[in-house]
Length: 331
Image (cartoon, rainbow, N blue to C red; front, side, top):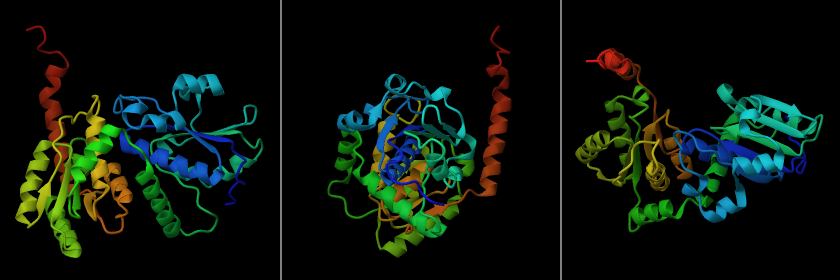
């Protein structure tokens, strides 16, 4: 794969999608690619149900002034809106435009084709990427293990420099002030319960990172009070000293929940090692931000746990079906 010469692309515009950390990794990936191409980097931040707020709720005003456009600005400047752009990898020679929207296939699968799209036939002025995940254009012939490590290091550097909203940064800084080095535990149960490991696997992993690091302080981030309370007690039973940040907002569709999640994410990004669910983008990117990916333990879903959760969901759906469909509404 031969990368296009730097300067062929004048600007790279990314539309980050899905939840907060999906958006952060898409932004980081696009910023890294823009540096590779020596292209101007821009972000079009469009709210969605799980991210109801504007960019100013996540980043500083200075960052937004430099990098963020709204949909109307993009339409005025470039003549398109995100909903009008095609899926997958497409070249528009007339507008000197390349669009990459991986959708169900993701963006990385198109990275080997992107260099050719950027140089032939139109040498585009603008590259537009619509993404809710990560992507990287490695040099030709580099083994996967090497470029994946390089990409993690680049994301780590980007995350550490990324200026989040001052309320987020201040809350995280206050929580970290005076803390000794600590471990991290991230629990994701509200919408990922079917991808959770068994509790015994979590305990074994906690013992492993405790013994390997010699640390006993541990920060717990959870998306439910119930899970956090349980694992505070479990950690104490293992000789660990747990701490956490009290959060008021758990519902990701409501204003304020983003701040709570990103404060936890920022603090997890200072852990020496983490234990987390392997299917959680939030936790993976926290481990990357901490520079602790190799020292951390990602726990895969357990089939028995997944089956139990699915059974509970089916039973709940059956019990609530009459009410949800209005069978009792006239009584």
